[in-house]
Structures are given as C-alpha cells and as structure tokens.
Image (cartoon, rainbow, N blue to C red; front, side):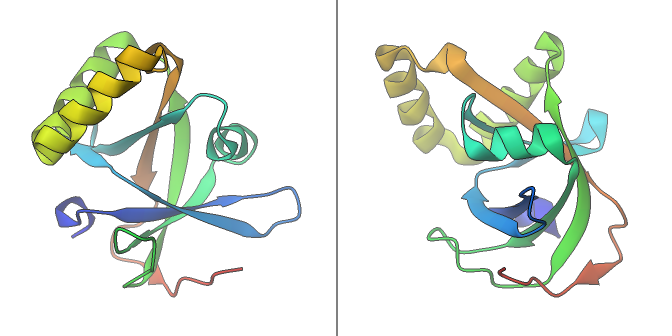
Length: 134
C-alpha cells in the first residue's frame, strides 16, 4: 500500500508530454482520502501540477530509484489552511524528527511560508501501470 511507503516518486508531465520523476515525502490524510506532500512554491513540480493534474506515483528509494509499479493519480495545489494544517500534522507524525529538523531550518531560512502543499488521489488504487522513466 502506498501509504506504508517511506518514499514515493511522483511523475509530473512537462509540456512535451514526458514525465519528470521526483522523490518526495508524502503522508495519507484519511479524512480527505488523499495523499499530501510539500515542495518549494517555485519548484518545477508545482508548475507542472498547475498545468497538468494527471500524475503518476510509484514507490521508490530515498535516492529516487523506482521500486514498484506506478499508479495513475490526480494532483492539485492545496490552498485550504485547515487541510494544510492536517496534512503537515500527518507528515510530522510519519517522518518525526526528520520533519522537525526540516521545518526548523526552513523556518530559520524564511522558506517555510514559501512552501506549496500538493495533494493527490489515486485514480484507481487497484490499477497499476509499469513506471516508465521518460
């Protein structure tokens, strides 16, 4: 199950149609039946999700090597403060001290408020497709 994976790689679509795979931390928010991750607000994956909601998600190693089949998903940029608070709580519960250290340095550098939450839901949790690294 994807929620049990420590790391996942999301494949976001470029204008050319090719996927850009990026390893991320993500946590499942049961109340929304969706997964959430965060990124720098100006990151490429944020821009690509803004342009193309269809993404792929696959389990991966910490370095981003895909270790299993990819699933189709629909992503969005989350703007709701209450959902954001719940998503960060889920991320902190999953990643513990690692997330605490990341938050600390992000706040110290002034980048914390520049983060963008990305939510995604699996299109069909039972339907998986082999990940293609294009």
